[in-house]
Every structure is written in structure tokens, then in C-alpha cells.
Picture 1: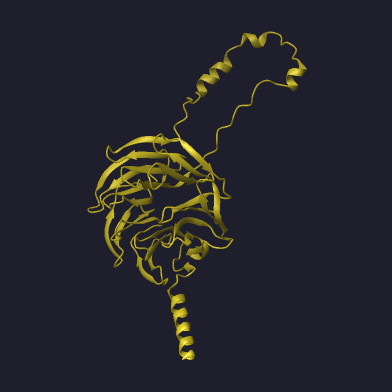
Picture 2: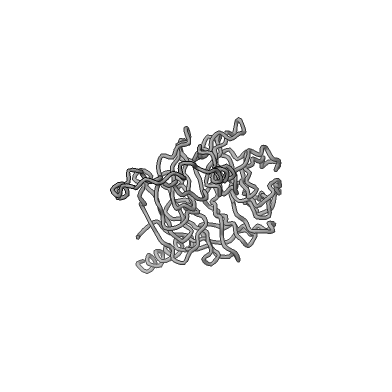
Length: 361
């Protein structure tokens, strides 16, 4: 009897190990730039610079389908609310819709004039948003692929888009260092964050004219300066403007009252949606932040740095609750595993999506 009990324990342990997800999902021949989980958490989608999307059984690591059709790198992937649609955005200027259940292509959406990066579905799945290298933010009807509205444009490429939980707002982030909020009922922009600099730009032509004019005061003999004034000048130094860089990721807090953003300035920033003011700045991290994710229980925020630094943040204290450095990894995206116990990142290391447990040092 003891022998049978031992065998049963070994078999049970082996089965449990077989069902646990692997440490990495390998199979692409180009870097992995985007990852997304299906709503039920069973399927992982990876978008790659090999022009394909792969769907994986997350529990076993088995590749389910390879979605082919894009002719250039895939920058964004997103599931709709019930997992019946997968959207992908590509450098080939198109969006493609797929059936994740069988891996079949459904339709192609055209309209952008440059690469399509981020794609996102509204909470009810009836609207698809996209951002592009053509600087525009657009809304589409996934049911027929028709454009609902070209909302407007940033000054540079759009790197990220996110719907508010109630579906009334859309946020977008850009290479131009700003975020924009769009009212989806009025279909118009309502705010830019941070607001434009109120100081008007200098006119170089006027400055040249001023230089050519003879200043009579300069012709008068200079008075001797008091050396004490040189040693203790009363003039205050001109404050330098804060350095900002591209906004690479955004998401709303569960109550929709705040917006989180990350970027190439190495900071995680918290914004007040009501007035557009920045309420907190966390960082700087050790490298550019490309990935931003929220756990399914809405309690944890994770960021992934370009150089391989992963952080789990306490938004109240502004300090990391967990940190891990993935040596040798160039990382572009991050997502929580369905159970919230690990992070999945996509990058250049082995052209794979890597699973990092949120345990240990």
C-alpha cells in the first residue's frame, strides 16, 4: 500500500509540474514587442517583429496558432472583452482582426497612413482604438471594420492608448511627451497633459533686429563694479524646465479618477483626470520604461524597463514593493499572469516572452 501511495504522489507531482507554465515562450524568429492575455487567462498572445502573432496555451506552454498576414513587424495586440476577437497593429499600416478560437483571419482595417502601434478595445468590446506613426488617434467599429472617428492628432507618433473603465474617455500618449484625453461621447479632445507652455516662442528675426540697433547705454562709459556684488550676487538662477520624453504606456486606475503613465524619462507619473494635473512622480528608474501593467485584482502596478529592470510599485509610498533585474534582456512590454504571481515580458532575449515569478529578491 505504501508503494502505491508513493507512486500516486510522484504521479500527482509530475502532473502538477507538467501543467505549470514554462519560464519562457519561444518560437518567434524576431523580437517580441507586445503581449496580452485573453479575458479567461488561458491564452497568451505575443506580437513579434517576425510579422506574426502567436497564441499559446499559457498553462502548458503549447503553441496553439501562428497568425500570419501582416507584412511588417507587429507592434500591438489586444483581446476584446469576451475573448472572441484579437486585434493586431503593424508597421504595414494596417490593423487585423482574428478569431482566437481557431486562429483564422477575420478582416483587415485600413485608414492610417503610417505604422499602427497600440490597439485597445473598449470595455464592452464595441469600439477599437488605435494610435499611429501618422500622429492620429482613431476609433473603429470592429463589427464591420469601418472608421467611427479620427479623433485628432498629437505632434509626433502615438505610442499608447487606453480606455477609461466606464468607456467615456480615451487617453493617448505620444513621442511628443504629452498625454491627451478624448471625450468619446462628444468625440473630441478635452485636455493635453502637461498643458502647453504658455510662454510664446522667441522670434529669431526680432532678436536680430534688436542686435543691429545701437544701444546708447552701451556707448556710455561703464561704471566700476563693486567686487562684493560679484561675490554675493542677489540674482537667483533661472530654474531649468523639467526634462520630459516620449510617453510609452498609459492606463487608468480602477475608479477612473487617475491616469498612470510611463516613458523614456524613466518615471512613473500619476495624473488627476478631472483637472489634468500631475499629482505624483515616481522614480527615476534605471532605464527607459516601456511596459506598464495592472494586476487583475487592481491592486498592483508593474513596470518593465528597456534594460531589463522590473518593478512592482506601491503607489502610496512611491517605492518598489518588488524589484528584479533581468540581465541581458531588452524589454518592450509587460503583463501580469492571470494569478498575479508572475510577470510576462516580451523582448529581444531569445525572441521570447519570459515569465518572472514575483518571489525572492
